[in-house]
Length: 431
Image (tube, rainbow, N blue to C red; front, side, top):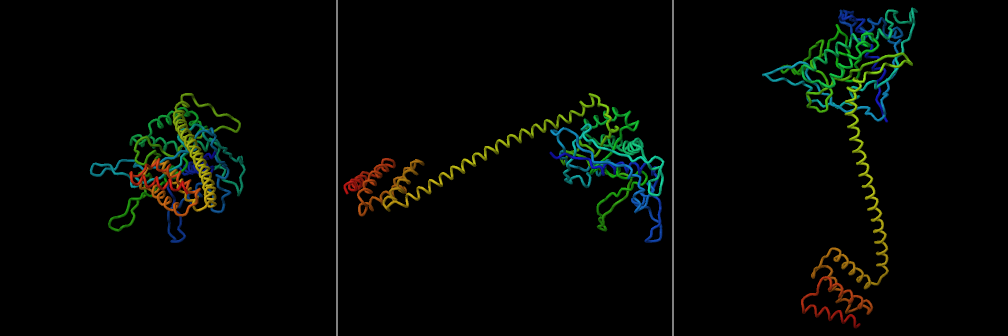
């Protein structure tokens, strides 16, 4: 069964952002020479990273992040758990904007984005390996700056310093707007409290990963300058925008596009660390119980889906059995029809007409159709006339017997016609 992963590149990118922020120390972008104009301009993202991590383009061996190696984190949950779930990504305003006493919706309020997500609150759902290359005090032209070589606790401290304030601010803001899933928020606070000592000692740290993690989580403090679209200018028709240090809206996970309550933020991850071969401490029972509520919801849903799937499978097998039976019956009927057609073809013209007349009788009996002027009766009248003129004696006798059987079923005609028909039948017997 397919299971999700947390890509090592995504994990490493989130760590890189936190380390860059730590080195930058809330400083603003520097001015650098513009080769095209000869003037000065603000440094771009690539130039900022190269300055902070002390390397240049083409000198990636000097990038200190090459000493940090991260593989993909694999899903280590039981195979009978859900790997992913489907949610809507909905866009909501961080702060209310009122016009004529009514709150304005986000410009992206009704956009439909369907996202495949990892379910929330799954304790220790993924496991991976982080390796730090230890160079000691070695220096050299092809080695990163010794001041930019981090221990695991240094990485954890930088990540906590960068992501923890964002998480706290986001939880408070979402709660104040009434967006937040309260049960989820309470459980997250319980997790943070329980792991408070590990977070403080940098044995655990926070990261934010994946799509819709928010511009604040992928940009540095001090240099953050987020482009905010403002729609088209009614006079010029051009798209208006402004640059701000925070976004005005946030993407949240919802079960329905119209939901405004019980929403969840995307991307928050708690990373617990231990040396290879060393076991992590167990989670407290009450915390496992709190997160188990989400697993119970998942199990109930999975049981429902499994039951539906089993019922559909039974229905499908029954349908296939019916189709096979119908196909077999059709094949038998086809063979019987072919045999009957062959037999009919071998008969004399009179015998074929008698056989066809018997088929008409069998048809009307099956449908319980008794029509004095119907196809059966009319065909019989025509054959009685034909038989008197030219049929062999044996076929005439067979027709006489069949005629009495037919009239016994559909009923004899009126008294005068009845006498005429009976006379015809007797005449056929006398030939």
